[in-house]
Length: 278
Image (cartoon, rainbow, N blue to C red; front, side):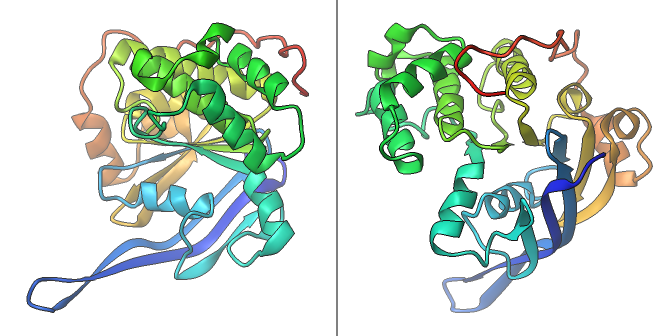
């Protein structure tokens, strides 16, 4: 990675505590001393099986959960420790695209209402209608879809709306938490290619949470591999995926089903979208 990090986590620990029916306490260490850095405009894939801690890490990075210990700095500011106007400004800088496009939209709200609600939350007083139209252009959906409700959209279309909702805050950093795992494989390719295009067009910083090793080196420059809350390998994505050194990473790559063709097609840089600052 080159350049100063816009997002940095150091020594992040997170333990979940619960009780069973007999009252006995149980502890699950989700993250154990995780460090990461992502430069402005960079891309980092966080890879691991279910239960590895990657979704917990995603929620901590965007401020939805707090770490038990360790720090998360966004643009040089301690995010979990921030309050008031400073925290609200930081929250606008980092947004999440959630995994399930069916559950992450309110079925009673039109696309326009969902986008306007997100826009007002992040930029009250700004021109919401113009922002909604720009977002539809960005995610390659017709403007007429603004008046549709989620039930009339396909899974891929819903996820494009979710991407638009995340981008309407004009963030610097986007965390995509298994953003295509609930979609058919052909639709996954469309969404991942869209994310790659948007990253270039908007100069976004991307943290891509996934269990699919086939997409890692096509989507991101760098990779971090999590296993039971520990970082077991990190480095350049193409190198790590082609020649992993950790036993766990080798097992992940070996267990991944063979695909007939690359899921993501790297395309030439697209020109900036009119009306959107580069």
